[in-house]
Length: 183
Image (tube, rainbow, N blue to C red):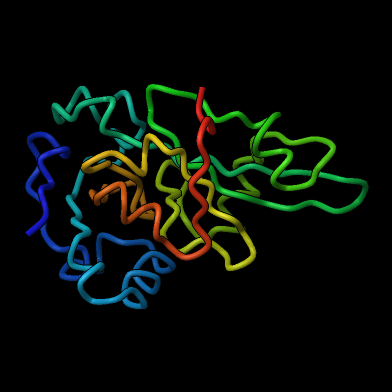
């Protein structure tokens, strides 16, 4: 069994044992993983009002440096808009206008509007996660996340959180580990 202690006072169970605690795209993506990898992902139910990182960490004694935020970025070049997800530790910020913009080959990059991110990902705001994102989105993972023994991420809904090894986050479909993605 994996060490899910990064979830603080919460009790986690294997994520696929509780599909009711997963957004639909997340459940489908976890089912598509190698069963040994899927078994490394734990899920714990939370109060949806505490889904934002700072509130979650304070309420459940989860270390802030053990949480990773998934940021949806929209990059534009002319009329073309491309999307990517950036996964960085909660104690850092993604280099949206530098590395992410260049990776998307965009002139401008910014956080995707909330309504856009929710509609395109099929996940709830505050629960967006790199697991189960659209197939044409690169998943940019900061090297510090990949090196973490475990991280807490969203589950696709506000009512739960996932815990998984950082190295598994780095091996998710379309994931690219990028040194210096976070500042």
